[in-house]
Each structure stands twice: as structure tokens, then as C-alpha cells.
Image (cartoon, rainbow, N blue to C red; front, side, top):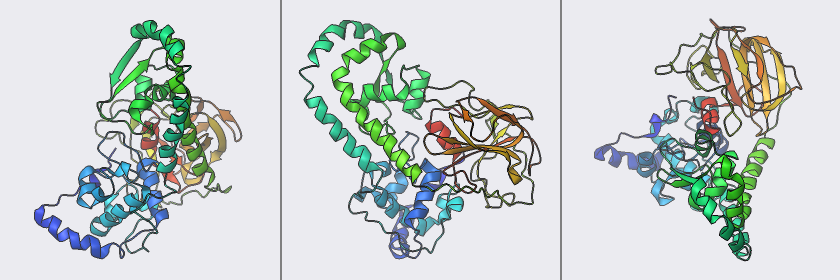
Length: 426
């Protein structure tokens, strides 16, 4: 995925000296609103201001460590993902003043990020009460209280189960690129990433999205599911609170976004070019089997034109989805369970299906040769919803796939980032 090389500065010592006054002098003149930065974050990290997947990019705006240090981020936190949303925006304003919107090449266009906006209303010197980190940070404290009152019940189950645990528990060391969903799927952890997080919360901390390279995680196999529960009963029970907090935060964010009933299809007079498989993408993208988090790839095919690619082919100025290189008649599947909200002709998109999912996001499947579901139908993960084709404004068969925050055109976020965050290997 062509992303994120844009935040690493190539400043020598002389360049660093010159950049300092530019950062101070241009911060207001080249500012952007908080809502604009929210849109950039949605495209960069699905709106997770405290994400750290171990790939060298941190926080909602995906800073490299060198850029964070270069623009003064250390005054707030050691890394961007450990800073508040307001503090990250404050540093991003400095980057925008020096590098311009091109520092976020894939998302600045769709988000409308430009120089010359009004200074955002942020308070970087203090932790913002409304930041996404608040609920995640507070939840562990609440969860620790039940653990203090549990000693009277903890000893009994531990004494009974210790012998069995020794023969059924294994461990895993976190490596670069890992997520809890990926580890749970690869190691066939019973209960998925939720169980993996509950068993290792003392190691991981209060945010399941943040795991560190080298951390040792305890893995639970299918045969020892009941035994493990008994062993860790006193410890795990109070630790379910963070999951509830995370779910609530996601749901609230989704519900706050209005869903228009009328869909505006993109207007374009130029046919979308049939995608060509990207370099190194000869291996089929994704798998038709459901992973531990309940998600699959929409098709089995190579990745084509990426999200955010610029050009005159698209009315918005950039590609709003991810293309998959497949021939006509390839089975197209729902990435996860949901309800069909649109099924039919989508103008430039040709035959399309749009599905609403439990997390409030919408998936779109376009240029289909045939549709096998109808509006209002409930679909399950991996269920066939149609066949790929070349309907609408295209020059050849492929699947155009989007993840949106509303059912409408123009609200897309990076679909590859979204799928990988849910454990889908692309």
C-alpha cells in the first residue's frame, strides 16, 4: 500500500535550523480545522488517534518517529500515539506549514486539507477531555478495582488448575506488523482476539490496538478453553470493561454521523481504467475463509488501483476505493455480516451493492455483472452477494471496493487499512 513515506523529513542540520522559524511563523497561516484533521485521520487510521500496529507509523495522523521529534512532539509525549488528539493536531499544523498537504498524499485530497485555513481550536498543553484516549485510559482504572476485592475467591480455582495449565499453555512473541486479530487467527485462539486480549491485558495495557514488538503473549488452545477460564477467573472477569468501552466509543462515533437517504453517485465522463495488478501483488489478496474477527476479503484477487490515487479519471480528483483485479463472473462476498441498504444500478458504479455493518461502517461493491441480494436482506460473513463484472464507467472487468462512514459517495476511508485492522491478510 503506497502510504506513509510522506511524514519522514529529510532535513540536514542546516535545514533543521531554517525550518524552526518557518514552523512558528506559518502555523496560523497554513492551519486546518479540527473537522478536516478528523477526516484525514479517518483515511489514515480509521479515526484511531492512539493506534500503533508496530509498522513505524504512530497516532491518528500516522507520524514517523523522526517527524514527531523534528517538529517538537517530544514536549507532549515520547510517540504520537501516546499524545492526545489536540497535541497530535498541533504537531500536524507545524508539518502542514512546512510540507503542505502533500505530507498526507493519499488522504489530504478527499479530506479537503489545504493551506490557509483558520487555526484549529485545540489545547495541546492539556489532555483533551473529548479525545478518543479518554475512555480507553479510564477503563483500566475501573477494571482494577474488582481485582482488589477478588483475593478471597482467586486462590481456590488457581490451586485446582495449575497442573493442567502447565501442559496446555504456550506463548508468542509479538513481531513487526502484528495485531491481536492477526495473532488470534494465525494461532487459532479460541474466542478470537477478545480472549487473547483478556488473557494478556496485564502485558498489553488498556488499549488492545497498541501492542509492542517483543511482548510475550499467552496463547490459549481449544483443548484448554474451560481450564484457562477457571485459572484466570479472578483476574479476567473485571478486565472485560475495556472491551465495553471500546465498543461504546465506536458505536457513538458512528451514530453521530447522519446517514442521508439519497445517494449521490460520482459524476464522470471518463471510463475508469481496468486496474493492473500492482508490483508484488501476484499472490491472491485475502482469503475466502472467515478469520477469528469475523471478516474476509471481498474477492480472491490481486490488488489493483489503490485508495487515494490521484488523476482525472475520477470526479473527486482521486480514487475513492480499492480495486481488485478479477475477471467477470468472480464470486463477490460480504466482508462481514450486515444489512443490504442499496442493490442496483449506481450510475458510474454500474451494478453495486452497499451493506451496513455493526460498527456503523458501510462496504460498497461496484461494477458487478450480477447481483444476488436485495435491499433489506441480512447477509452473513463470506456470503456471495453478486459476481464481478464491468458495468458502469470502466474499461475492463474488476471489483471496485469501498469502506464508507455513510452509505453515500464521498465518505470513503482506506479500505485496505480497515480490512487489515480486522485481521484480513491482503
